[in-house]
Length: 80
Image (cartoon, rainbow, N blue to C red; front, side):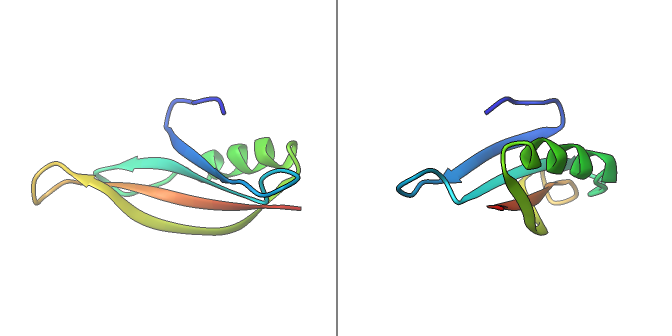
């Protein structure tokens, strides 16, 4: 899996015959704002691999003190 600036890591849930789910993150930083174009770009990249976007939710990856949680969008892709 390639790493792109602004994108976090990913995890592919493996089953016989290939992964049926893939989970990836997009970092939002302290502000918590995700550019919609990043979600679209990542969704298009995953669609080219046969996955469709199933769920998106916000999570806190870590915190830099009490005033700046590092947020990320978690994208769950399902093999289409």
